Amino acid sequence: MTSLTSLTSLQLIRNFAIIFIYAVLFGTAAYDKWQTLSMPEWFGKQFEKTFIRKLPGGAAVGYWFIASLEALLALVFVISIFNFVLLPYALLGSLFLFGILLFGLRITYDFQGSANMFVYFGTTLLSLFFVTMS
Image 1 (spheres, rainbow, N blue to C red):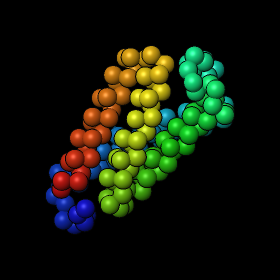
Image 2: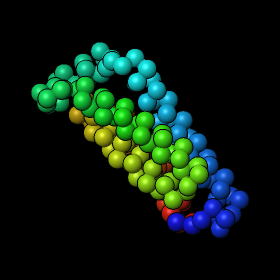
Image 3: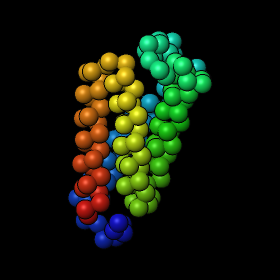
Image 4: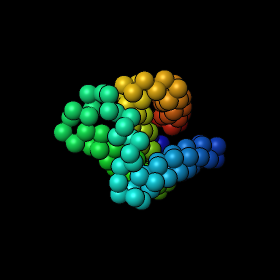
């Protein structure tokens, strides 16, 4: 990874834009989940007909894991404003989160949501490529 002083203006703008969009995406998602401190009913119902409901803690464990990962990623993206070395790791974490979300959508037969996760995953992969190639 290159240092801040060796990046061109366009690379800096690109990195800040990537950081901003992901910090907002994950920050607002985490805030919405942690604000009520309870899992919404619809989330539990979404997994009623899957093996997830049979696991210890059921869908609640997955919900709070996702909420925690979103909050952690938002924090890492904000910190990466000051240290671009963390940006690729934040993007890798995002790929992991989108994979988890894709898995959940897929086992609940939400095909449109699954297709949307491919868009998130693909744009994140592209962002990771651009960030690591500079």
